[in-house]
Image (cartoon, rainbow, N blue to C red; front, side):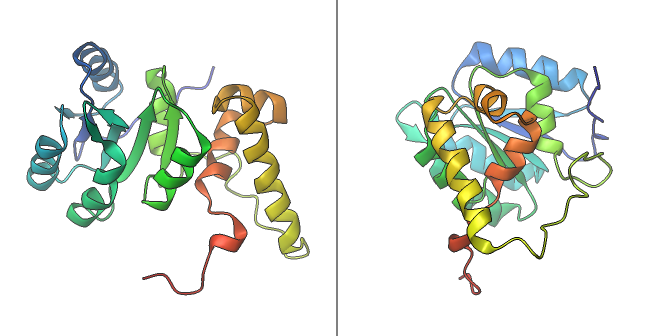
Length: 196
């Protein structure tokens, strides 16, 4: 089994979750994989730690008590523009996944997740990590409509699987990592020429 290339701990990883047991277990697992983990249980502490430590990565839970983790994503990017945010949730839905990506999350995983899946999602596309699908360019002869159809088909299967990315990848006959990359891209018609 291929182990992901772990980062050199130049900057910490911010873990934001209100489940103390989950934080303890994931902190231990990520620390053993080369991350320097700092954790927060609410949005206020997360903002303060992001400002102070300028973390390169963030693993963020969608539900933080009464607070919604989606609100924090743009704020984190304002504080640390190059931060890679991974949103975790036990309440997987396509609408939430799309909203997370629109707000700037790098990836989205449904709980329960293992540490290796978290590491792969965080490092996917980072320089220095191998990407078996990175060298596949968009074929210029493929019409825009075809890419849009692929996106919609993926979304339909994801809905049928209740947001379960692993099951969706199995049904589509692709690697989970490949599916996560595809989900991280905006649908074709949602890519305006000017943003902001």
